[in-house]
Image (cartoon, rainbow, N blue to C red; front, side):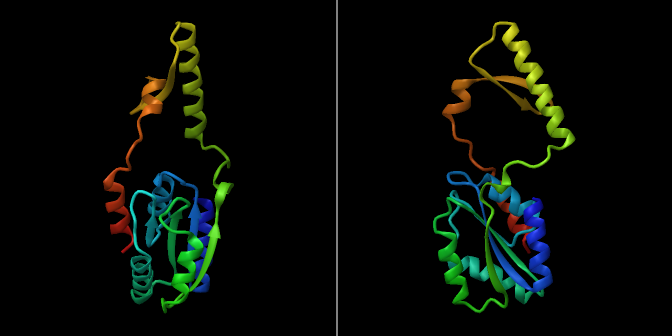
Length: 175
């Protein structure tokens, strides 16, 4: 989030649009959350194809509405390459100068929050208690406020879909 916030500040001060590529080769959850929390005009994920023309329209609409910047967050596994999108948008007249930033693995790491530290401690204690009680082949996870054991087979055999409500929120907030 810090990187996206800084890029949005730069975009605003220089009246630019940014294409920000984030991790997400097979899953757009990170790009969608970044877009919602970072105020992006458009989010492109592997799960939801948005045409380059629609991206151009949404970013151009931001300019028409008087915004001094536009942000597109793109998962690395999007249906097209971010460079191809940049080339396409540069042929349009969106009102913004467009820049491309690939965050890549800079998103990993950073200082843990107090919540992160407490969660890690709780998970570690729960995992140790389960091992000492003879429980194996499970992972510890958070369900609501409770630590729960999930069989490893269940944790690795299912692909979790992105909640459609998040896409709806992103669309509403980008206006």
